[in-house]
Structures are given as structure tokens and as C-alpha cells.
Image 1 (spheres, rainbow, N blue to C red):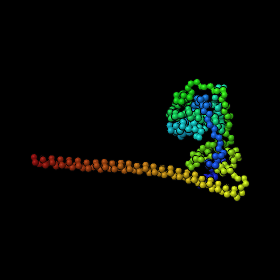
Image 2: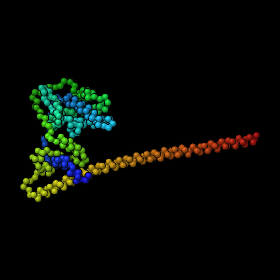
Image 3: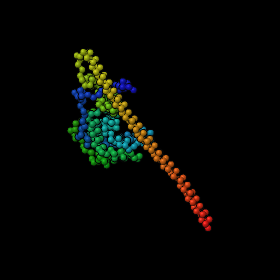
Amino acid sequence: MDSRRFSVILLLLLAGVLMFGSEHAKAEKKVVAAARKEDIPFIKCSVCEAIAKQLARQVKEKRQNSATKKISEFEIIDVAENICNLKKEEGDWILKLDIVEKGDKLQLVEQSEEGVCKTECKTIERACQEVMGDHDTDVAEYLYKPEATRAGVIKLLCKDLSKACVGKLPRLPKDRAPGEPFTPKAGKEAEMDKLMRSLNDVPGAPAMKMYSREELIKNPGLMDGGATRDPDADEDDEDDDDEDEDDVKTSQEKTLVKTWRDSVAKVGNDVRTRTHRVIQTASKSMKKARRAITSWWYGKKPTKKSSSKSSGRRKSSSDSSSEEL
């Protein structure tokens, strides 16, 4: 697949709303939501129980999807390490949780679809990270056992290790400011987010960014790398800008394809080098074994000849002795 086809497929998948990050877009930065740290003590136990549920479910799914129905402990460690990371697939479960105030407590309510990540989403992520801490390896070691259960994870992580569910739950202050309502992601936004996440893992494309339709309508200049268009510009100037933009995109796409090809070539070279080393080692071992067998085989025959000669000498000596007698 050449770079042109690659670019066409990429643009179709992203529906015209993807672009490489630019310094010019700083003027239109979105307000980044921050966690409400004061809410964490009231949800820490519930978050820990949700972690245990997700760990047990995701590890079970990995085993079922494996051809051998077995997975390594390292694969389980990967799940445990990423379970609290919203940038990873393992952390998608956080997007479905809503923090609801009931009396003097905060409860986690699971929704049927993913929501827009705002303050509550970040708060749950932060609580999750505080609960897991450095316990991911210990939890993974337990989940590797065939007899591991969700209840066992809760006991290990929530009571023994993090102490998140030990002691009495504090009461919620009456003057607590209510959180924002749960807002489901519109249309194909969830699928686009997952696509963006997978594309960001491609070598050479770490700065890709997606803008919503509302952002593009509000500031059309985002599609041009962040620069605002001049409505009074001449038609010829606009054509020149379009050509420049196409040149930049083509150059970036070529760089991306080249980086991908170089990565594949490097992997291929590594495989060929390792294979060559294995063959050389096996050949040396075979030659060494052949020399040892040859040496052993030819070393046996002289022994037999020498023994026959010695017996002949003994026989002749006995004959001469009998003649003397």
C-alpha cells in the first residue's frame, strides 16, 4: 500500500476531523477537567471493588480469547498496570461510572454507555491510582492462580494491601458542591476515541488530535493547523493555502509511512540475524559432535590392532620358550 492510499484510508476513517497537533491551536485549548481530591475518601472503597470486578473480568476474557486458554503472568501484570489509565483500553470502564450523592454517601452508578470524561471521571481515575499504588504485581500474582476469584481480589487489594475498605466510611459534608451530570458521548465519539488511541500507538504519529464538530464550526482555522482564515482573502490565495496544506499533509504522511516501513525492516533484520545465529550455533554443535564421534570411532580400531599385536608377541615368546626347553 503506497503512501497515497494510506492517506486516503486514514482521512476516511477519521471523517475529516483528525489532524496533527500544532502550536497554533493553543488559543483554543479546552479546559482540562481535574479530579476532586476531597471526594476520593468517600469513593475509595467502591472504586476498589470496581477494580476487583474489572480485573477478574478482563483476565477471564484474556484467557477465553487465548488459543491455549492460558495467559502468562506478564500479560496479567499489563492489565493490572493499565486498569487505572484512561489512555488505555483497560481503563475504559471508568468512563461508564457516575458519582451519585445519596444521603451522606457517594455511590458509583454504572451506566450503559461511556460518558464524556470530566471532573467525576478524573476523580475516579485518581482514586483508582491511589488504591492500586504499587500493588499491581501482587494482584497479578494472585490472579495468575487458577483458583483466583473476584472476592479474593477484593480481600487482597481492598483490605490487606490498600486498606481502602478497612474502617468506617466517613460521612459526606452537607455543604459539598454537587458534581456535574453524566453526559453520554454523542454518536460515534466513543469509537473515534478508540481509533485515535490506536493511531497514537503508531510510530511517528504521537501528536495526532481530534476535534469535535462544534469546535471546528467555532474555529474553522483548526483544520489548517490552528491558523484563522482571512474571510477577505483572494480566491487565488485560498487555493495556494490549500496546496500548501496538501503538501504538508503529504509530507507528514510520507514520514509516517517511512517510519512504519523502517520499523518493519528493522524487525525483519533482527529476525534474520537471530535466525542466522541459531543456525550457526547449531552447525557448530553438529560439527563438534561429529568430530567427537569420529575421534571415538577411529580411536577404537588402533586399540584392537595393538591388542592383537601384543597377543601375537605373547604367542611367539611362548613358542620360543618351548623350543628352548
